[in-house]
Image 1 (cartoon, helix red, strand yellow):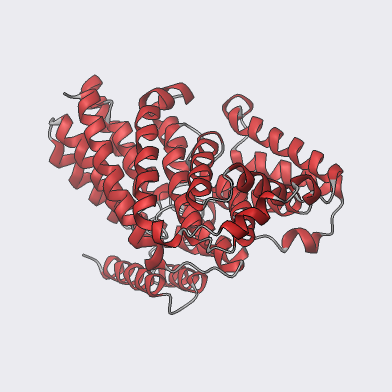
Image 2 (tube, one colour):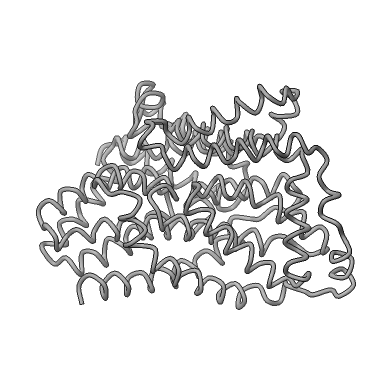
Amino acid sequence: MSWQLVAAIVVFAAAYVLIATEKVPRATVTLTGAALMVLIGATGGDDVFFSADTGIDWNVLFLLLGMMMVVGIARQSGMFEYLAVWSAKLARGRPFAILTMFAVITAVASAFLDNVTTVLLIAPVTLLVCQRLAVTPVPYLITEVLASNIGGTATLIGDPPNLIVGSRADLGFTDFLVALGPIVAILMVALIGLAWLMFRRQLHYDPQRATQVMALRQRETIRDRRLLVISLSVLAAILAGFLTSRLTGLSPAMVALIGAGLLVLVTRMEPAKIFADVEWETLLFFAGLFVMVGALVNLGVIKALGGAAAGAIDGHWAAGAAGLLIGSAVLSGVIDNIPYVATLAPLTQDLVDAGGAAAQPLWWALTLGADLGGNATAIGASANVVLLGVARRNGHPISFWQFTKYGLITTAVTIALSTAYLLLRYYL
């Protein structure tokens, strides 16, 4: 191995340890790691800023920026307070009922919006409900982000890796829904059961608080009805833009930015108030992480891992599908699943071309492994990173290991169920 390869692996491993131990702010870690990758020659300016495969994924960053701005403006209308009171009253103030309802809403929304957008929309509602009930929001937030990664698996637009797979394999919205919709429904039932086992001791029911919540009038929470109507209209237009992106040629990032710009123009809200809700630390964290992973791609580390997996299949498609699913889950828990899928998609395409119909389920194995494996650690998926940033800003920090201990359990169960589903449906 060249000294650059060794140095890059050391930098990445050290950065991962620092992120896990939380001794240094995570944005500082990834930006420093990115700078070191440039200094050792593992990546360069053209790769960092202009490469779609090994540089900063501007689509992800601008999608996040646009939706953060939209959520920040919509928040001023009182929309989230309304949803918080309405949902708490519907569940009659019972914590587990609220958790279940939020998890299902998050999963369904993540199938039609991307999971990062869904987390940005549901988190403020959750924080307000928990404040009303005087309970910790941590179990709710963790369950919701796990649900978002599961629900986003079901459709083409639900998770960014799905867009990569769909583009490479020429698979449409219906293809994803038919192939992965059934297992996602099963996984959501499993997640609700796991949430009860993992969090039941933290879900305390307070009859007095519940009575106070039931007495609230949700209509009184709306502070600006004009802004509410405008925000809902723009959100509906953004959803339509996401669903029709293949027809219009507009990427989800462009749709989000156009929606944010339209809201800024119509509402004429002060820029300082709008940008105050943007998670700048999260955006910088992602930028650094993309550069570090891109450096590993440049040096052939990820391709070598994928090539080794491809060689091990050797025509045994059932075993190959199971291996690709499990291997993708493991690797997606360590590195962000977007660059991982971008690297593995060409290798999977070669295998599918060679194996024909028998190898076609490898696409679903890659999708399930990458999406569900993102639940394993706090940095395994974009939604995880965003949610931890929102929780920290609102005074409820969730540590790397606090999230990961629940994420690992959930990932193990969902991957086991997905492997069984894949084998039973396509090979047995």
